[in-house]
Length: 384
Image 1 (cartoon, rainbow, N blue to C red):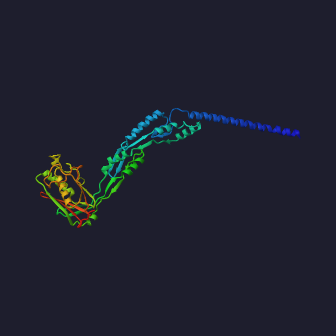
Image 2: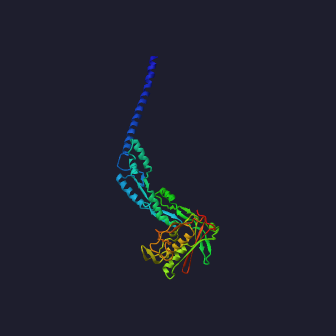
Image 3: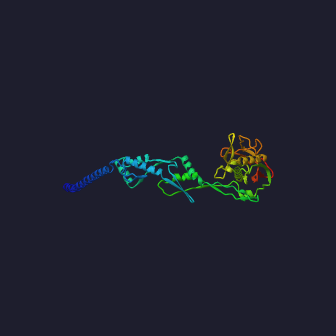
């Protein structure tokens, strides 16, 4: 029996030996493979001083050293800041330089991140990050917007697209009767909304940004004017001029025409300069005598102070509140002393408030050598 057991043990030893040899062989292969892998990874992750292939920051940075990358990015930065953004609306295309829009950006932090790809962590972490980059990775600059500069640039280039609302108004017909001209809505560029769109705008896009608008509603409608009962003459005041002074007479006619038929809502302030506008040759104004300092000298728009002074006296007779008025430095002949109202665009203005308690209609009629203002309102006047 002992002899049989010994034979069984000896017969099993060759199998154990084979297994042991196979294990040793396997471990050797694994060690060789790991060694080879380690060597391969060491070669793959060897720092060549270049950015990993596949990294994009505005431009492809793969295979560039840090200095070359910085140089190319700065060149690209200048190109972008000098490039235009296109704004469009119906029939209009306006381009504004990106730098003027208040954009500035830096690639410093993103470039540092790009350079560290394949350089941080263990050899395996380096290899993994470098491999992932080779399949494509995009980094973004840090954008900085100067909000006041952005709004200023948009206003500067796009304000010409704004159109003011036009109130319904009376037009004076040739028979001196009144015709109602309907109101018109206006529009203004929505700067806040447009600023947000500009900030979202991808720098590499070529399409345009559509310009948004806010609607401006008129303050007086045709329906309101149709319902008015302008039957009460609140006041009337007339002054005289010399029609032979052609330049001065033309200026009076232009200013009077701008005011005639103007309707004020309750509590609305009238501004002579706002209604009449700048006195320019383009608007048709001519040179005539004006008061400058303590002298009578030729000047553009001479004579319109007679219009403002005549209106001032009509306002006084209607017991309306005057909010701004200045006297001439020298006496004038068309109104009694102390009853004048000088104007000079844009600094000196004549203003009053319609505190009649209802709508107020201003009529200004020229007849030969006479300028007359009529103020019409409600039958009864209740001061606010």
